[in-house]
Image 1 (spheres, rainbow, N blue to C red):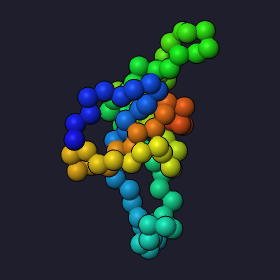
Image 2 (cartoon, rainbow, N blue to C red; image 1 turned 90 degrees about the vertical axis):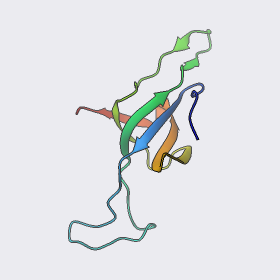
Image 3 (spheres, rainbow, N blue to C red; image 1 turned 45 degrees about the vertical axis):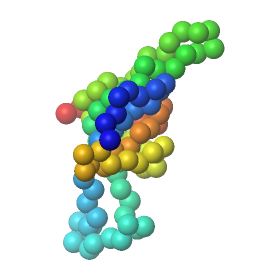
Image 4 (cartoon, helix red, strand yellow; image 1 turned 30 degrees about the vertical axis):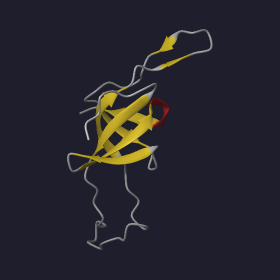
Length: 97
């Protein structure tokens, strides 16, 4: 599958690999693992319009490193890598590299 474009205020994030082990070396099952969701923005939509018809610009740009909420809108796999499609407002922060 290849993404042609994102619509509205959607953001496509390539997720970083997750580590399912604790600092002590204990392997956690999927349900117990609290995954910090970090990744890199791959693509963004054009934004949304406010009540007066003005375009509200996106807060992130492609290649930004971001932290997102643990549960996003849609989890997908592209080219064998996990990605998540979220709304612009669910991006918690942009990380300085």
